[in-house]
Structures are given as C-alpha cells and as structure tokens.
Image 1: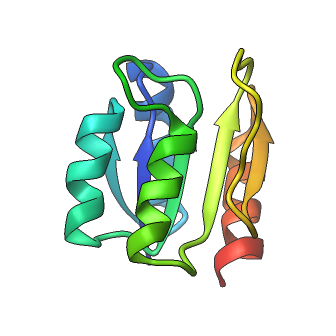
Image 2: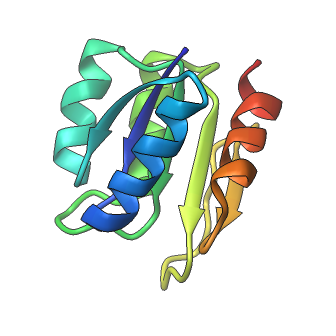
Length: 114
C-alpha cells in the first residue's frame, strides 16, 4: 500500500516516513501543496496523510479536496497541531492531532484504508 505524506517540517517528515516504511508502507512524500498536487495528478497513493498548514498557496484541506476530485474514495488523514483555518475535512476522513506517535498513525491508516 502506498501513502502520500505531505509535511513541511523536514524532521517530522523524516520521522513519519521512516515509521511508515518500517510498518511496510511504500511512502511518497512532499513538503508543500504544489508538490503534493503534482503527485496527485499521477494517482500514486492509496492513502493521503497531509499536514493542514503548509507553506504556499495550497493547504492540506485543498490537497484532499483536489485529490478526491480524481479519486472520490481515497482515504485521507489530516495531521494537525494548530490551524487558523476552519476545519473542512472531506467525508470519511480522519484527523490526527500532533504530536502523534508512529503507532497511532499506523493504526489510523489501517482503520481507514485496510
């Protein structure tokens, strides 16, 4: 199963990528919304895990909305600590509060996608 991880903090991104790979997932990662949408067009992920607040013009909510236009059933997990934006998760998604443990994220992926 492949996971697209969108996280702008390089330390968190590296930590999560390693944890997901150890759990057996193929991980593709992006550091901002523009990179994530480039992957989105290629339809490479079985699950989207995205930070909500990202640098640039595209936030995690928008990534999920656009990805779901192409793949309406894509499982989405939002990882967020604080977001000034009003939450607008896509239907059937989950929100994981930062800080989270690798086990918590893996469990959430399994619950939502498998």
